[in-house]
Image 1 (cartoon, rainbow, N blue to C red):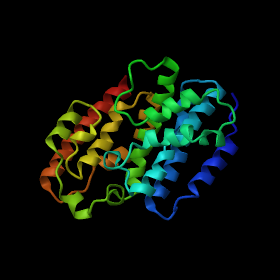
Image 2 (cartoon, rainbow, N blue to C red):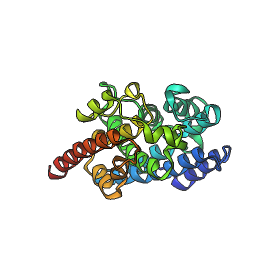
Image 3 (cartoon, one colour):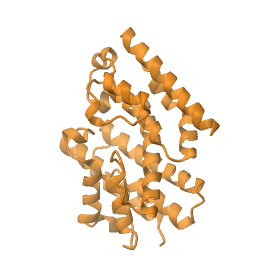
Amino acid sequence: MEIDRKAAGKAFSAYVQAYDPQNPKIALKIAHTYRVAALCETIAQSQSLCSADIDLAWLTGLLHDVGRFEQVRRYGTFNDAESIDHALLGARILFEEGRIRDYLASPDEDELLETVIRLHSVYRLPQQLGTRARMFCHILRDADKVDILRANCETPLTDIYNVSPQALRTARVSPAVMESFARRQATLRTLKKTPVDNVVALASLTFELVYPVSIRVVQQQGYLQSLLHFETDDPATAAQFAQLRAEMDAYLFAHTQA
C-alpha cells in the first residue's frame, strides 16, 4: 500500500486550521504530532521494516492525536478523565466520520490504523492483539511517550495542567506515586492526587519504552533529566525527587548495559 506523505501532511494541516493556533494547547499538539510522526519513522527504521511499513508507522504518528484538537475546543483540557477519551474521539473522527480518506486513499490498512490510534493511550494493550498490530502499537506508544517528555519541558506545566505556579512548586509527590515509581511502573491516572504527581507520571513513562532506540533518544534529548530535576520550594519534595532520580539512573544504567 502506497502512502502519499505530502498529501497526508496537507490534509492534517487543513484539519488543524479549524482550531486556534494561538492557543498554547493547540500549538503544543501540532508540534507534538509532527515530532511523533518523525519518531515513529525512526523507530520503524531501527527495526528494519520495509518502506511501506515505515510509511505506515509515520502515518500513525500523524493521526494519533487528531482527537486532542476537538477535546481542547470542547473542554479546554488534555485531562481525559475530566473530559473525553481523546484516543477514542480521534478514532471516531477518522473512521466513523470517514475523515481517514483525507489522508489515505486505500482502505487496506484501516483496521490496523483504527486499532493503533484507539489503543495508543491505554495503560496496557489487550492480550489478544495480533503480532503486527502490537508492533505498530508499540512503535506509536514509544514515540508518543518520548515526545511527551519534550513537550512537558518546553511548555509550562502550569499551562498544560491548568495549575498555578505556587500549587506546583509547593506540592509533594503522593506516596502511591512514589511506590509505583519504585516498582518501575507507569503511573496510573487514578494514583495522581497532587499537581507534582503529573511530573513523576511523565518520567515514569520511560519504564514502558519497548525499543532500545527509544531509550537512547530519551537519554540523548535530556528532557527526562530536566523533569526529574524539578524545581520545588519544599525540601521534602526535593528529597523525593533525589530518590526518583536515583531510581531512574539505576534503571537506565541497567538498560544501557543490556
